[in-house]
Length: 268
Image (cartoon, rainbow, N blue to C red; front, top):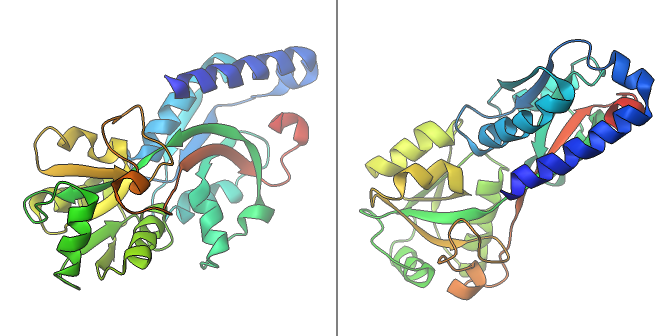
């Protein structure tokens, strides 16, 4: 509901600006607009992109969500970077792109120089999730004790080195002195979650859409949210601070960006 409200507000502002700028309204868009999701279908970026695209169609006409996964969100971003800076190719970006710059990860671009922001569209809370058969715990405190009794024996997965999933779990490991092996996945929402269900890997920190279908089966259990506050999706799930691990907070935000040198009037 919040995401749709934000989309409606963005659309209303866009329509008002187009009415105030007839020349822009007459010439843009001149062909279908592509919103690039840098993940496979079904992932949080993909689902968010589709909701945003649905709201934008009333103002922009034909808008297509295009999935370009891989490279820890780099392939999709690089595709938009190399596109014509004419507003017809958009990137659903997020703090994962900013985090890559902060960690000095090898990229084909400089996100601050090669992209211009259009606007913020949504926030997505992240949760710590365990595989119940291999990690039979019911709270974060129990998990911490369980891991400390098995140093180096458990595996957590992420969406790649430098991803938010990776960063959040490493923060937990650092703060609590935990020894957990890290395995990065190219397609965590499909292959990674499937390996969680089977018990090949033990835990992860991720957004709700990736694990929601599997919560009712009992194979996965949510222990805590990295969000600063409890969430509307799972109000019964405590924050990390409430669950015994204070000092760890993270909000995954989404925005829309375009290639640098896109005319400011088009960005508006």
